[in-house]
Image (tube, rainbow, N blue to C red):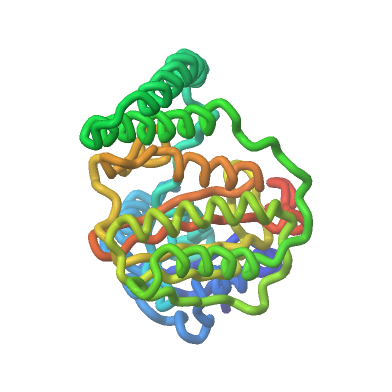
Length: 349
């Protein structure tokens, strides 16, 4: 008899039972949907079939089977046919027979640090710095414009143009720091229309130098969103890919079921991914890449990813990434809000 009861079968949380030999005995429909694999495909197979390469899950299972206690594992990686899955996993011994119940709480590979947890002093310092820089910049620009009118020497004018160009760039950076876009009402939005808009922007900028691929799930529902803000966020991600030396960029959309975003659980969320074959995120920046003014390029402003994460938060979602040289994926996870489950309901019979 399958270890999962009818009550557990109905839960939106992905659940799996394994025996003492670490073979998969049973799993509920939510787990099948999350993994993108059928029950028939998985039953009877060793858990190592899903090993993400770091053996973290197998080691945790062995530990619990030996000690007969419960264990919580953060950020476990599973490898399936449709791509890697990441989750927080709770391992609990079965009551009536040798084996374990595995409860998966899906997460992302590298969740972006939440700007709201940064010290308030840092936000105040950034704005204070921007205010202090704005007035001298205006004076520098005005003086350079006056100087340009009085100089006839082409070489000298060239240096004045450098001053004007750089002061304009810094002024734009200051404006972006001081004038964040005010939130607008969210309306029903077709995410594929947003992705197509971003694709056209990328074609206009990169031309034939890059291959843009589409991998859309046409069954996805509309989402309550600010289409312009979503476009800006996704365009920032695509531009990062273009600037990383990528020759291929893939725009992907998928449905995710039983998703935990922060402290909220949802029956359904939409995952929009930008995948590229560029240089990847430098390992030294992996923990800081979403912070304002952090960039892997000397000429970068360090605001693109911070803005993209802010847009994700405005929509109740999350932005994360996984990266290695030649393969980087940024994932924007957006909840379909009428599919929200609170914690009590999610664990109810």
